[in-house]
Length: 256
Image (cartoon, rainbow, N blue to C red; front, side, top):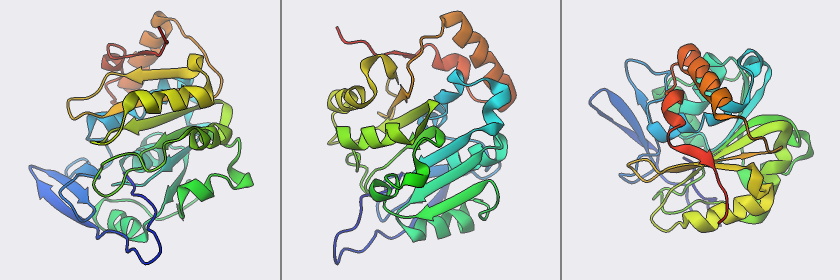
């Protein structure tokens, strides 16, 4: 997760980590976990909700994945970034506000240096995503923007989601983590639907921890359950993600 933009005179939170039972967790000055990594398998995705942020794979031909561009808003512990770059071999861009998070990920969480497939941009995501060079270039946009107390999404209005939609290619998808003690899932869902259209929106049931991942397509499609099941089998076999389980808790959002 990333945190809100610091105001004038406000310092960004301290970055630290903790190890427990073979898992390393990133913290931003509180006990709240902002990301994690298995110490013996640092390039896999450890948290269930973060795995679900990869659900856009259900809408992409597997042989085309490596030709696509992934962008993360919020670096967290780098799990999505490492997976997209290393496992999926995608061009991967990250927008992160706090330079200390980048230092921590490079020092403690096995994030590789920038190269031909990886670029980390230190910037305010709300500003950076409006730059013309990003428009229409992103195939998989993964949004996980929270403050250091994980209280509510930092950016969560219709205008922001419309800007996210503008980043996407015609076949692109956004996945977003909706979690927080002060957040309202239904209100957030309404804002996403207003920006993308109701037919474009899919959602998981919440995890045990309370994270709900929502997916929105630039161009709405409705694959059959059989097609999704076949794609999920391929994802699970090729990339070791629990995609067949996703289909039991993932469906299109329809207003009553």
